[in-house]
Image (cartoon, rainbow, N blue to C red; front, side):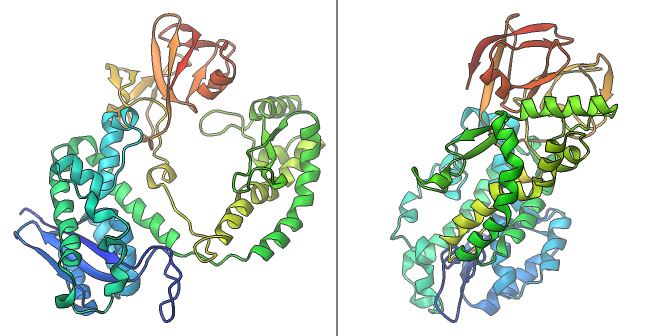
Length: 459
């Protein structure tokens, strides 16, 4: 039996606004004003602004195992209705777990990653407006201006639908219809993304729920919090600054204006520190801890096991350093925006580990011959730098990143991200970022027998 599709959308108060009483702050789940939808088995678009009716429709779709709910950035809309329309989150999770939720925005991102479009067109927009133009050839930009109803639905909150202006009724109905039609066009290319679609869609919902709960931030308390940690951090960093392992970075804290002394900070020379740590472990006769990608671990626990006192002290300060370098700047930024709320946004594909270091069609040597990397599956055996076959244990798809084309003296080349690692003739790993800093590195790309990287790297 063919499942029925329901494409739906909500129009809400503006996102991240401090509303007057009795509404209060709503964060990333603002108050819904109306619900619009289009069913695949009907030829009309529908809308309701009565909370009871909206809840009834949503509950009906959630409980229907023959109904697939489709949305554009659907996690946002689920967050809205779960918070304000008494929709149980367990029902929402059940719908996801049954594979009955689709997100046209995520589908398009996954499609572009798989086909290489994300590399060819890194600035592509994934809004419903952009996809409506792409697939349907319809320009809806007139509905997105500052004075358009899209930005003003709070004015219609509680107003009977019969009294709404015609454009205010048409816009949400069109969004539901366009979502359904975009979904239909994407289905023609589903072989490119369907293997990873459901997991990504569920991950988007999980991360959005985390982002919905945003605490208030007090600027004065941030200063007190920083002073409690900064002294310990400065003491631990001083020897590394003196030795040049921590280097000045005038743009470290970009949340401060230029000229503000707080803007300056330090960046770690991780390559040098890794060599120091490796030598320390080797002198102790200990195995050098490595990251999952094979680099020397510089985690706090690794440094705490070093024989060098300064390395241990830096390891002890690792937590404080992260607070000062990462969390406190983020809190300061939040203190001045969104009603002093620490609003968190997640790039779902990046945060769930699905990032890629090489172009989607990069050939990889398998027991069956060369295959494009996107075709590899868990269990396939590939040739490694140690001249042996090893099975693939997990596959990933990467969020769009800047790609570099590395050309070799043999005429071969590879397109990859700055973090992609290459094996050198002195049995160490270097990244493309290392090559950008030192373009005379010698590479050994066995078994292809690449020997030397030329000095040409292009974005």
